[in-house]
Image 1: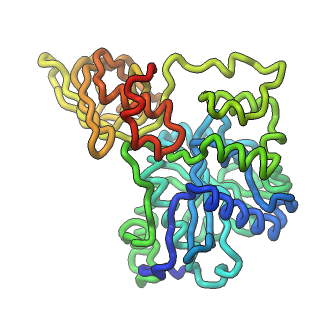
Image 2: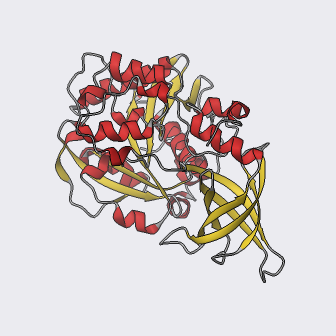
Length: 405
């Protein structure tokens, strides 16, 4: 089955779906593929749109051949709504292993390209693989697929089935049977090297996934080292989930409440379903300081009397008053010092901080820090994360500098 071309046609472009036209083309391609496979009934809109597509933690990737969208795949990151497959599969063991999780979902390739030896599929899978590691800071990929498709993921990509038995009825895909599977991206390169390292170039998935640079891939232009690339403006939310489809009208009361908690900016509220009268308001209470997922390199230098003064770190979550970081070795609880954090290619923050406690039950190198003295760069960064509606608006972060956090 493997036919990975190191030099795909120049007409093939792989990118994040960002515009209304690109998103609509992806949702239409997905609808036709799912209807054809019996995974959904035809929708009057001609689109397959789910609540997960509305979330800022979901990225829809596409493959264009010329001006036509010929492939799509989505990466769903953690949110208060969880993952689609959590309704039937237990991923608690994966959580205990540590690291971020993303569900691979909504894969479709134009039927006219399905017999071209992976001409679209393999570049799309490579894009997904690189995007997950490079931008989502993902360690674990999980999937729920029809049993007749699991062979590709197991036999070629070395996903391992989740321990649960395959289910016979999965509501997310019109009651079709499903198999859950998992890939650890931390160990995948060595697995691919072992099985594919000596294969010829067009069969060498180790080289293809881990070493080859495809010029066809266009990564998002990002100012900051964030892990999410939201594209859904209030207008796009209204268009896809109210006007074109009835996706919002099909939500449960709990999903509506959680959606309001995720989109707490007034511009979005006008287009969300009204809260049910008996909504549990406790679920809507915002945190005093919102937390945001990032992947920012940092160096911590402790005060002079500390025996080991310097720690290389990666900040993985931040708020207005603190952050969570993974260090090269455990940082003593209560340690004080100065941290320099690279927020982006041109933005660096320098602050006085203190380690207040361990930040992970599974990794002793993860610590939670309190910010004792911040700077304008940090305030601009966090305010932009809170107020920017799309990843593009983060590029104009200065406009958010003087907003209260």
